[in-house]
Image (cartoon, rainbow, N blue to C red; front, side, top):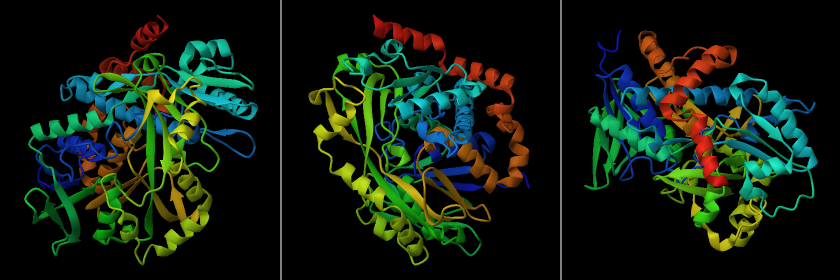
Length: 506
């Protein structure tokens, strides 16, 4: 049955980057479908998608060392890096389509070109970085990546980080100019505004408090209007739960078999933000280091140039911590409310496996500002405490589930989509690389939940994403065509990076 014959009623819970992306895709594919968004807060993109709650890295595995693991035989597993890179290319193609078709006016409002660097010290890590460079740089997906262990070259690449640095051990970095800084908060707000212009109803200050099956196999949502302090009930053919950390409770409420034996592990975060314009001017890159032993992958230290509200900023972090809240605006009872008879064994198994991680997070939580500044000085030796302030970043809820490889209570570091067997409800859980891969993840949701319609939509999807259905790794010519096209439309050409670097050097 075609989408024109079956006009679906779709509800998206949460006005974050995932719901905004899914809504925009569906509006292009099925413009006559009725879409409604419910958001607990008073505007879009205020939780995990907010620009101050994440690092804004357009995750393409250009600099993130946790995506390339050293195997016991000393070789580097680059499969995850390739996968993440391919997924980010899909996001870029969709954004370029939106800009080209005037659905987004100015790409500079949400994406800027920015070099991505990996930076390490010590003989062992330098050897690792060189092997990683040799494995990645031969692939066209990572074309243009450079490696150096020459301090003089590093002074050109990262002058702020090399200023007054005492070099007592080997030091090295890789650099690639095709990286990006993405303001996911701005992008979310642009997409949600576009949806509203297309007739999508967006209800702010509306909290979905319950979901249950109806007799005719639809979904009834209990929605709390926080302004009017009243309750209303709405029904939908399809529900997407994109409520960040709040998704787990709503998924559990659906009662679908796929929601069983799943728990959440909340991780809080902090960033140091530079207040000194002279310091901000000296750095132009995202520079990722190696995570400390025992640290979760989302706690890899990095020094990031950001573009927020048209202003250049500089962030360092994240410092991880533990909070039982599942959302920044959530409740201290969130973790306890997620414990159910069907997942308690899974949660207990996870707790037993992750005692070192819990200790690490608590230790991070207890750090003083001066201790955090000392960690920053590993990146910026000249850092002064008075130039930096602490901001609280977003909450992340990592998925805990039973897996074949990890056994009971495995902590998953990544993005997970849970869908019902009949495709009428889907929920997004987890964290990084999340927002960067939103388009690929939401296409997977559409594929799982609307398989019949997907056959008819394929032509439109290929118009939006020219590489759809093909592996860019296997097709160098297609990759270069796609990259040239998206870079031109999104303003990500190398000439823009060169202008900024010349400004710094002058």
